[in-house]
Amino acid sequence: MKLNTKEIMEIIPHRQPFLLIDTVEELEPGVRAVAKKCVSYNEPYFAGHFPGEPVMPGVLIIEALAQTGAVAILSKPENKGKIAFFGAINSAKFKTKVVPGDVLTLEVEIIKEKGPMGVGKAKAVNQDGKVAALAELTFAVGE
Image (tube, rainbow, N blue to C red; front, top):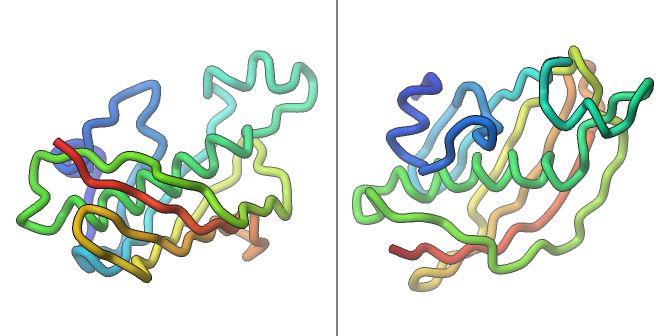
């Protein structure tokens, strides 16, 4: 199942300038999601991170992964209209810089779920197949 930006916004509450995924390429509700983020020089954070050497902040790569995971978990019918909050970020590693012109593929697999809590295994890869970030994201689904 593919989703465009409008369809993503029907699942998660994020909006510009904080909606950090452009499309969802694959979706298995409650199981996994694969999204794309086209990194544009026009992103507001590039003005200060860093002048003359624009690099996407690692925390925003993690947030884009979290939004991808949120699409996976909130697309389950029983979670419609809810919000997924961060519970923890574990084992985060940043392997390569993300710069304007990169297209990130964001993959999140839900590996554990108990009640409103869950854990997603997350990976961001650039268009050259280089891993940009890895993490284990814990989330809590709330109202």
